[in-house]
Figure 1 (cartoon, one colour):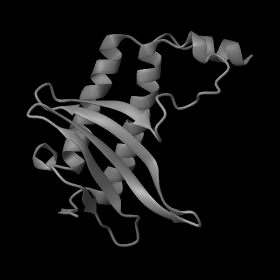
Figure 2 (cartoon, rainbow, N blue to C red; figure 1 turned 120 degrees about the vertical axis):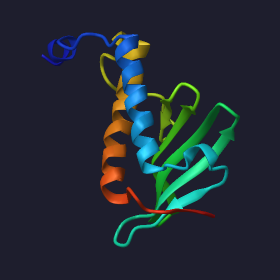
Figure 3 (cartoon, helix red, strand yellow; figure 1 turned 90 degrees about the vertical axis):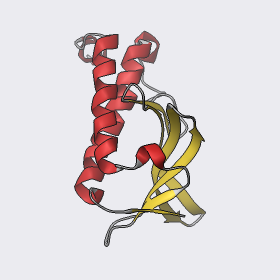
Length: 148
């Protein structure tokens, strides 16, 4: 039965995944309008919400790699969740997820993972950030980002 449910979905095409990259670029641009010029760890603070952190991993004239996350307190110390690493292609207006919590797939124990194409895995990762960006936009849109 699980196999039948899984196989009902057609494999994703490059065009579908690329469209999602464009959608996510538009959303991150609304959330962080100054993203192209941010070069240091920044944070958005909203009363009653966890601080939203943006870490800059790498920056070039046309691309940048960032991590967007909440820093949560735990008995073991501060942890980052959902800890989404993504690359932005400023010249092409695209955002591509690299990993979520240092994983390049969201469900590494899925029984049919071996049947997933690279496009399906990219779709899963980028759909995750799309939904999380919707959440972040509902909580943090219009908030000033402060450099730490």
